[in-house]
Length: 206
Image (cartoon, rainbow, N blue to C red; front, side, top):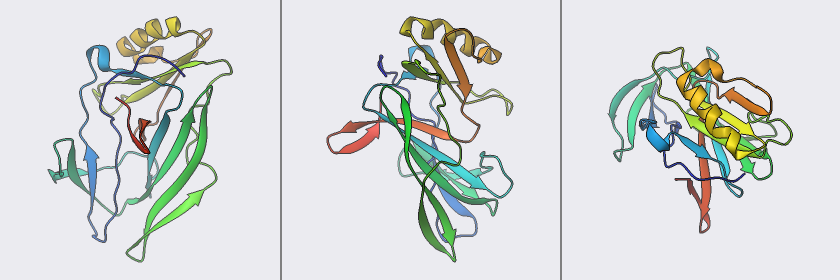
């Protein structure tokens, strides 16, 4: 994938279990998605880090109450109850296609954190049509619980992405497959963070 990079901070969850009944979960603060920074065009060589909460009640949106500031200004600490069972971290490679590469599930068993490798993700994302060379993540400002936080749009030509992005931003119902363009929603509560290699380490793309 190619294209100019947006510089929006990720809206993803970083879920960390501990031994408490009301577990503390650091959650990065959402940055307002506005102006020229409300989307990211994926580039070859990047990867996508996808965090999916695992809940007893189903769905993916963690119900939590902010309780304290995190170690830096970009996070705050929240407490989650017994509905929260754990989370999955999955990775997708960005190249000529967006391809699932690995996943691991983090759970707490007998007050101990366990990590299990999985052959497939809980939710398989980025099922893009053949020939969709340009892929963009659009960050949206949540207005109500019925709204979505992120859309994935794709097209054969980069020039087709801008009008589709504007349409989806103005009217979320415009997120649909029309002609040679593709649009789908990331399920609410699932966090997707684009990352790029910085030396030997991966860092959020910005």
